[in-house]
Image 1 (tube, rainbow, N blue to C red):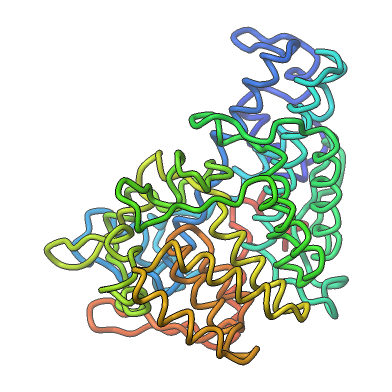
Image 2 (cartoon, rainbow, N blue to C red):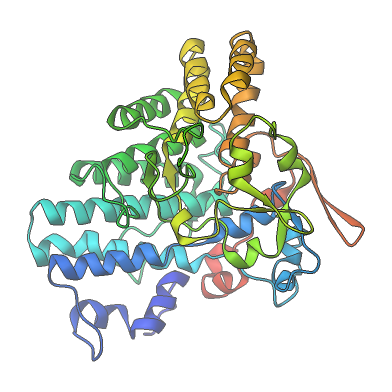
Length: 441
């Protein structure tokens, strides 16, 4: 191939599969060109299984974790904890970039080929719809790692990430603007919604996008964009399909992010891989924001080890999570407040707290929250997001959206600081991606 391939993700797939043309047009030895709905389901399952685990690494950059200096794998994460992006130790674990585009590559193949090869029916509609949603979510995640947070005044000129929406190796994959990427994400969600026809997959298959998951993603995308009316509408539509929450006051209740929890929507991402969990303790900051005697999440989320608290909620495959109702109640609360509906905001926040706090303490909280002015109520919603969604991959994004505050981390008595509005709140494109695609410079 004479021309330089501009998209580093495609390069990786080419190295894996031989060539895109061969993969699409010729049945290579040892490979199966997808022809049936079952083949395309297998291809899509590969896309799901390979979805990035970046959120484990992002958690290291937040105020949720404290380093275990005796941890076996700490060398892989020390410079991430220091926010040393300019000259990290060569053994430092790299943030995943190509993995997102590999997932997009598979999604693009399903979108382009599934109904031509396997016919148009409810099953292939669902597959194509899932592929649109998976492509949308991948671009959305890339945007929120490698680009500035959405600001309406500058999104049309702020550099985003490359868009990959067709199988074209000659396309020049320069970063699109933040606005353009958001527009594509929303367009893909809308296209997917036209096709999706499964509201809920059974536990074990609930890593797949559904009509509920599409609404949950839409609510989050519009939330990050500050489009509060659309965010509220999507959250309300999703909760109208299923508004259940795990009641932690009930014996036998599950962790809210468990794949079998009644509030589960999509269990795809491992948000704290074991290697990271074994290299860090829960930070004193995160522990301090719970009423440890009355908040039932505290003993469910964390356990005491010999040297500090560790996570109980995010290390196993059963705790993979992307979307759940607890988040939707908080999106509904935030969006309702931002659109002037204080009553709904208060109702949503209290509905969640009622399932998380001991009854006597909840009554005290109810009185306090009902008396809050708008500004203080918004702060309380932010605080509840931090408590409810701890270690599920939301904190770094919330820190970026809510003012990019200064953070400090300490290693062996030395303090490192992420400054207020620090440029390091936006990650650099990986060096290997820049080498393969000079347009990323």
